[in-house]
Length: 120
Image 1 (cartoon, helix red, strand yellow):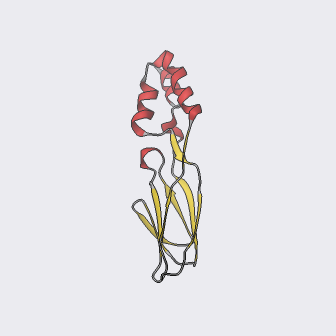
Image 2 (cartoon, one colour):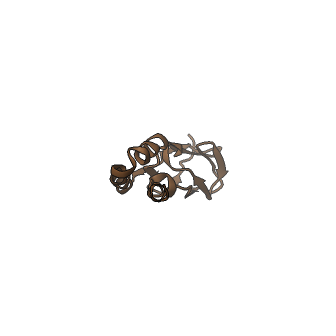
Image 3 (cartoon, one colour):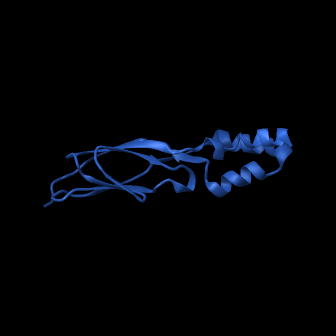
């Protein structure tokens, strides 16, 4: 049983913690919305991994045209392989857990910048 638990620590779920994302704009002090979080540029935010990664960052400021950017996601192919190999001993559990949580995904770009244009 102890050996089986040791293999479970290899799944992506264990490696997928919040990631720091920095967001800046020109002009400064623009409003930011990333997922359910809000703030003002320049800012840093801890965003979750997996299926919880926000899809978009919206930056806006009165008198300026707002901008929406997609959050870049990456896929951990190595974690998929590490889930499959222990699966020979443990069955499909590590793979199923990571598929349910989406923890193969991570934020691949952690720095975002928007140059806002004056509103017309």
